[in-house]
Image 1: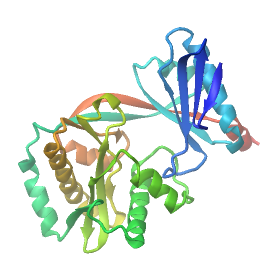
Image 2 (image 1 turned 90 degrees about the vertical axis):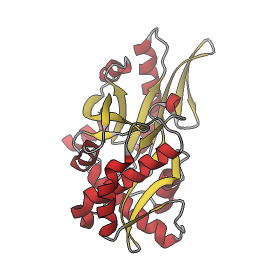
Image 3 (image 1 turned 45 degrees about the horizontal axis):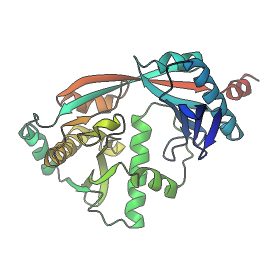
Image 4 (image 1 turned 180 degrees about the horizontal axis):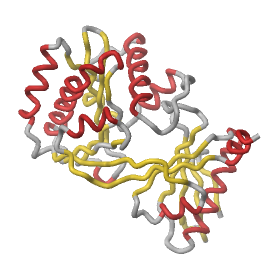
Length: 292
């Protein structure tokens, strides 16, 4: 039996025992409200294809009224679900590298020069937790985030339409994994010119208490000439925060086609970790519509 739960998940059960789950959701901060993020959770080892197919078909039926453009997910290369997704019509889209930084072994003094240059240029750093969250401040952060995200994510072509500001703030900034004291914002006077933030690890839930992940980070387009100085100063604050709070590692999530992120991570002693494969399933009605 397959049943829908909470409009975001389908669950497969055999004789009252749960044997598989497929979740799906729209993320308010993403480019297009008709792009769904999906994923399988653990599926019983027997009849994997049969269970996965039933879960997938039930999920597609649930979201069909919204006519999603595509479904987007990701797996490790050695995950058995990789081949399952291929059989369901997903295709490989890009690779996301997931290197880690050993917090305890990192020497913060190595970033003193970059931090000094950053300060001499007249910039300073504050945190989301320190900011007075007026509507003007929130709107400025929203604008900066959208600009950086559009330039540093290559999931799909950016479109001019966004979700509402209120929905974005609730989904991104008020997310339970966000740490306001570890959300660092670079300022030029009162103007926000760059940001970077750490969050509780969601890639590896078992490491939540020992590992932090890097979320979106980058600089405003008109300040890209100081991208290195701004981002290294922010990374210094991130690593200092992780050290102070006893975290063992920081895990990055790097798009292989993103020069801005690769440039910064190449200057820090990140060690190659697991590779994630992004996969997409373009929906049939999307293909048919463009073919006619």
